[in-house]
Length: 267
Ligand SMILES: NC(=O)c1ccc[n+]([C@@H]2O[C@H](COP(=O)([O-])OP(=O)(O)OC[C@H]3O[C@@H](n4cnc5c(N)ncnc54)[C@H](OP(=O)(O)O)[C@@H]3O)[C@@H](O)[C@H]2O)c1
Image 1 (tube, protein in one colour):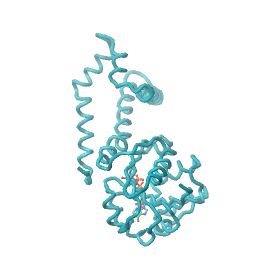
Image 2 (cartoon, helix red, strand yellow):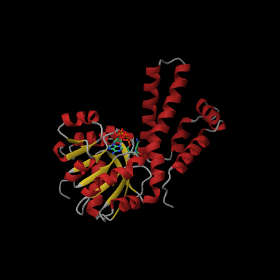
Image 3 (cartoon, helix red, strand yellow):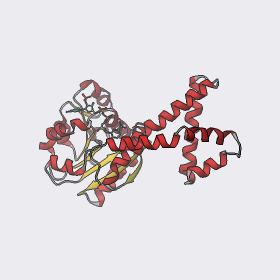
Image 4 (cartoon, helix red, strand yellow):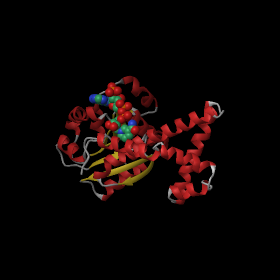
């Protein structure tokens, strides 16, 4: 698929990170990016990088072949109505808006064009996102393009849209859940004598190591845990105490409460 001009509607955490990641990866030239936000101050950083910036969402959408919606869910309707006059055949939409379905986007846009949902996480700022993608009305070439775009911002998975709410919890909320583990482990490290900085480094690098063990070997986590848990040993004693206090159970409950909070589950 030929090069596309990309509009990003919303220059917040995610929209901004997408632009920075796309620039860093070289997937698209700054001059082919059109970013809109209602705050000029937030746009200055992008202007300096040669990106086209707009305070009116419809202005950015006008120039683009691909429109990325990166606004809060409660702003979705007003924003899509702002850009509606600029949505025409030949364009495509990617929405990263949590809980807004492809059907809702199609209905509000009022036109039959390729629409994709993508669910990245904040590691997109480091091009380390896990982005789940679902699509409708697009050709294989469209899906390949969307996948390639997010491949430049981390790893991608194509999933049925009915799993988008689950993907949101596991991947997008998952960043916060994993970080809360890191913070809690740090607190323990500090109580045992490490300074905060060292406790943070040890914990974060340890989590990275655990992650790599699973990702690179494909092993079930319990297989790697078995290697660390000597009978009557230190690790199994701590692990079992955590489980007695509901470690796995509270995690799963938290995931499910988050999942049930997402309004637009398709099931
Ligand atoms: N954060 C995550 O981990 C994550 C992961 C996946 C998906 N998402 C989804 O990504 C979307 C963006 O999240 P975010 O964290 O980047 O939000 P955010 O930081 O609030 O960014 C949204 C930006 O869009 C701007 N915007 C531009 N035109 C607007 C208009 N007409 N009305 C309202 N806002 C307008 C907002 O301006 P104001 O500040 O003035 O409102 C804000 O700067 C959300 O739907 C979120 O659910 C987030």
